[in-house]
Image (cartoon, rainbow, N blue to C red):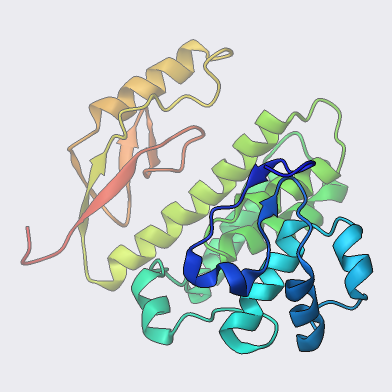
Length: 256
């Protein structure tokens, strides 16, 4: 091995003369035939002596040289074909904003005004953020950021996230009811998620545990889509109560 060489580059004999270098390390010093060839192709903008002794990085010259071998020019970005893009792309579902009816908007407004952490001056701003969140199919980040931007005293990230999820869940429950009525469904089945319907386990009260047990007991029972189910002394639907993670399974006439 020559003096000053860090290692030996093993190159196929067929391309050894074409590459024109034998010594490689953290930086390699190309031999004059390679530099001259690169200069001739316009890929190196310095004279051969400077390029040889200035310690040009292996990636900068090697990448340009391989591009010259392929097509005497800069490497081009590989654009996947339309068929390949369709083959490897993930399917997406477009949310229909028409589902956010005037009734859903009115209910959303009432739910925002019922949150004790917000002052009256915050209602419009939070409502607009909540409406945008719901219209995007449950974009919780939009509403979460709007709540945190208010810098309310005692408003933690966990609480802001819970409020965002609860407002979206209430709106989703109402839109689900409308969808079920649109297919002439009269009944649906209450389905418990398996997780306790408690908003905050550390601060859960006896009423929270009683309601959570009632939600669990309702799993598998049928209820009318229009009225909902009577749970713990009040009419409700899956996802309406704070911390509720339940869903519904619609019963379509003729497919019971």
